[in-house]
Image (cartoon, rainbow, N blue to C red):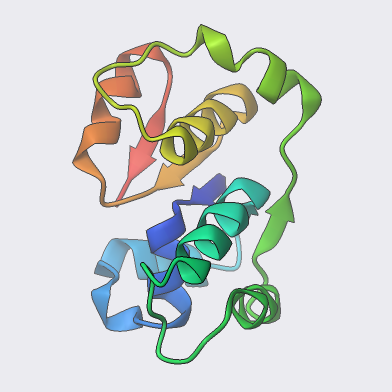
Length: 132
């Protein structure tokens, strides 16, 4: 099965593993799981880190990426089709563009997102698979 980490899930997996649920930890550590990270998350993390809105115990965004790769997390780019068809995703009272693009990538790629963000559940009726 293929999973996409929400931005906070990536940070927690690398910097604050104690914040992950037992289920999320098992999925991330399972050999049979395909765990992905979106380049959109890297962009979001980099922006928030630069604005000093994100603290990661001295871990910088490039180091976060290095650590993710070390544990087998693969990075997926934002594809042309995903960005050009993004307008098809309903707002669902959720306006964060980073979260919405992750949702759209999951729907388009048939990935399950690993996220604690309860607001994302509003996208389940239109095809989002979500777990925590």
